[in-house]
Image: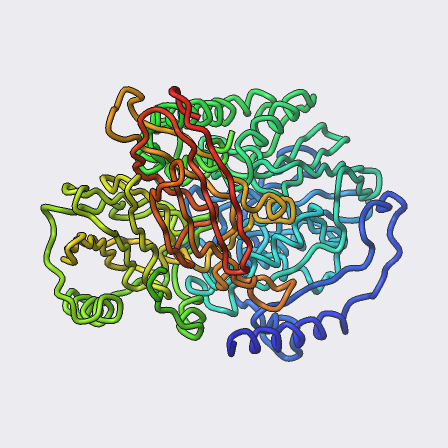
Length: 344
Length: 278
């Protein structure tokens, strides 16, 4: 009960801190009709130190290398590792898209440090305001950098299910990250102010970004983006290339979603993990094969009466040579798949 | 009916902060129990006394075995198999996860239509721990076997997939007969029950800090009216509990399931065991 009270106290403080600084309701373009215009941030477990007057913030923050994979789309390659103190959880492909009037961030990164470094990179590249920060899904390696952008007062964009999922998991994720990075460097939880239920469009000035909310696939709250100007698809973690995918939503849903995305004509796609850009739909072949193998082998194990404990060691084992970090994720993926498919 | 399952709320809360992430992104475990063999033995001595009183517990490697992964892929879903070599003599089996907030994960009493030969469960593991399986024979003797399992954070891992839609299906059951249909003595049956088994340790900022505990407390299985087993369970069973057990079914019969949870909800379902399974 004590922990509970403390946490609620912190939340109250954090919310006040944000509300004081943010414009309560900034006029939004008509294209936001489907989203909720009021922006609400939520800080858990303490202040964002950067928001406090007089705090010297992130002296080690600095720009990192990005690649301009298409006109105005800058992507940083995440390392193919799990979170460590050394890599600052900079493990996802993240970046920004530059329009005539403003900049859209997707995603803000895996820690406060990662987010601050991205922010510094943007400032070095272009003198335009960051007006949108897309939170592609709930996983910490993509969104814990969000609080680095609070000072820009952007619209945080997420799937309609993101807020609920973050409320359930965010504090848990944050505790795990704090154990690695410490509370000051982890970043706080920022909830989406613009919630996308189906589709939405974001206008950066002469540049329309389509936002699509998907049914449960990689997670229960996946967004993909499409830049009309360059024909670039940004499916975030719906697409892994040569780095082992993690299943946290629905296996059948992911296969179906990927099938749908394949039909989308795009010049290139930006994987959530893997190279910063790849041909589309060719780049989806690897993950589609893995997911199909996972489904087939798990279904077979269930049909043969092979228990979940044995299936974890055998299903999709033929894929081992194709993926970095295979052994860190495959067993868990089989467990998730098994739980989903055994009810059929 | 069943035995008292020791559990304290403060104990539960204090462990809610320990452990590794069981989400989809792997992070190193932060707070694994670093205690030594002597500490673990002392803990078991205390615990076994609390559960079984002053009764002597013999080392039972010849009678009972416990299979569990040395290092679990998912601390919120650790598959466990308990096998006994003397099924005719077995009255009950108890699974104890020594360092879990509520250590007694399951206590299963077998009836005349039950076959204790093998029992499979899926459990949550909060931190590195010994697991004990204890067989109680019909003449009152106790035999134990144990295993050290490396897994942590399974108790506080978010049950993210449990939304309103999933809760609407609470109590839904599925039964499958496994193994050789020609087996004349008994069949292995797997029972799946949809239930979030919220243990009070999953955070939910939208409500009041934690999703309130709601978990399966007991399951009764009968075959044509004869008892197969009675299970007393607690917060250590994984979400959507899965129980695989032996039933002395000679091809046919009506298997009746009654499950009760901590909100006093009762879920009942009957399955007709056809010759080819259900």
